Image 1 (tube, rainbow, N blue to C red):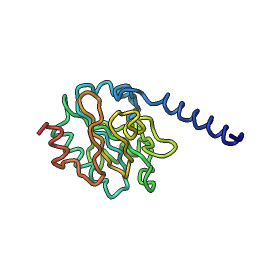
Image 2 (cartoon, one colour):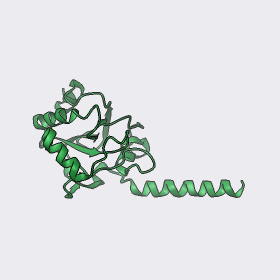
Image 3 (tube, helix red, strand yellow):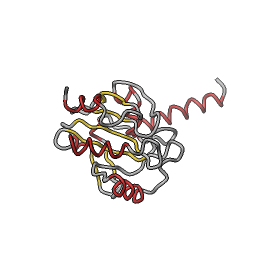
Image 4 (cartoon, rainbow, N blue to C red):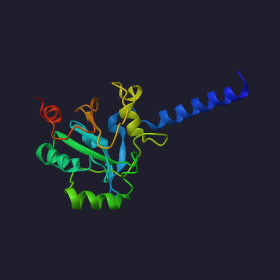
Length: 183
């Protein structure tokens, strides 16, 4: 092994170690800031089904905010929660600041479900939550790729990843509603 290969191998191990150290073992160990700057702990979601969705304000799927809000008003509460994560990973379709995103969501869609501070859902700067959601080594269920804005991840009442739902699937789709209601 030459020196370049050795350095590359050591660097790769270091990067994997650093990433592993940042990814909590449990879904409930994640903590975030909301768009308003308030603390939000996933431990508050214990016992609830959760839909995680990456969002964007300038996307063809942006009207899904209205459907997400309808889903939340219909089923949200003690047994179900939606948590939105604005992300600018696809064609710069979420360029706004947290306050601009908050204003957009409230003014245009009346969003009342929890919206977190903007993160990255893929690439070199992927947030640890999305590493957990997309890598079987962390979530214990499956690998996936975030294909576009408004991809949905379903988490059961015990904090386990259940399924990945296509960005094109609307929030009020029977597949999602039946999962929430247990039908």
